[in-house]
Amino acid sequence: MSARRLRTLGAALLWLGIWQALALIVGQPLLVPGPWETFTAFASLVGTASFWLSVWASFATIVCAFLGAFVCATALGALAATRPLLADLVRPLALVVKATPVACVVVVLLLWLGAEGVPVAAVALVVAPAYYFSTLEGVQQVRPEVADALRVMGVGPVRLWLAHGWPSVLPYLQATSKNAVGMAWKAGVAAELIAMALDTLGEKVYQAKLLLETPELFAWTATIILLAFLCEKAFLRLLAASGPAALSLAVSSAPSEPRDCAVSEDPTVRVSDLRVERGGTIVLDSVDLEVGGGEILCLRAPSGAGKTTLILAILGLVRPSAGRVERPDRASAVFQEVRLVEALSAEDNVRLVACGTPRETVRAALAELLPGVEPERAVSELSGGQRRRVEIVRAMLCPGAAVLMDEPFTGLDEAARESAIAFIRRQLRGRSLIIATHEADDVSALGAAVLEL
Image (cartoon, rainbow, N blue to C red; front, side, top):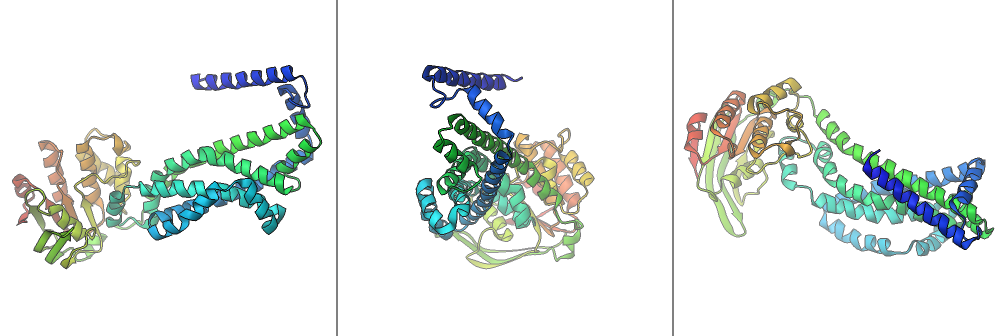
């Protein structure tokens, strides 16, 4: 047994001892029954059909209401995070519901819904605001640049949510669940008690109190605590398992299409009289270029001259002030900053976008650029240069007719750089390639044309 489990067991025994001591001091089981009296009452209740009927009635109601509120609140929170107007509309109502005492709500709901509907509504009103706000905060912390990169490389909204959205929001939901599950049981049983819902745990608690059956009252209370504890543990385990499951589903559900299918598109990238302004400052002006299939163009300019802005404009991630951009529907990219899914392995980051590419091909490509690195290793454990090479493999195996790279060789030593350039040239396969770089050696090694900005 681990040290933590021993400490937990010791703490539980300590509090049982304090409870027993208090019962002995009071000396009146009617006021404070001891652990043994409570256990005896519990054992007698367990043997009755009425006990299990009440447990099932409350369990089914509270769990169903909890799950329904969880799904609705997380969906609404995710939607509101991307729509500020909706968030502004929902926020006052969510704050009011969050602060309203359950007892006050139950009295009103009893008039509207009757005894059967009150526990469901009470649980939902307690749970929904907690999960709404945690989801809202979690989605707002999702890295939008990673989402943009995956969209550019053809990852649809469902797979994007599974791979990037859900794993990012999950820690917030897990933290909320450590309180929300217990609160759901408190609210549900309290509503049953006030509404006198027949054959429920709340009604049994009320009857035990009314008849001064204090040991039974403690036994029913212990039953509620145990059920809440078990539900919390089960739900937290379910959430913990959902993270890896979502990631696996996002990768495995990638559409099967030949990697060269995008080359059936016209791979030409054309930019005509492009102008980009930011904050009233002209970043790019009168830019023209054309890169056809199998051609490589290197963008060269001092830092801050607009190379990154031009690449983002071609990818559709920056809106031009004037001019025209034409490119294939499908493209792939290596961005200036790392845009990998941190929770995925190197292999799965590539497979997420490399539709139709056999796993053996992905592994061979990673082994070529990252010798000695296990493909199952999480990218969060890799060095900056290793992560950069994973992005190069991802971009070259993604089925896109155009490839754009922003300083792709940053952080690579000479041997890694040469290996990466050879890999890019071999994997180009008739696509157009635009690379932003400071280095003249990159231009000669790639055999590229040059555009000075």
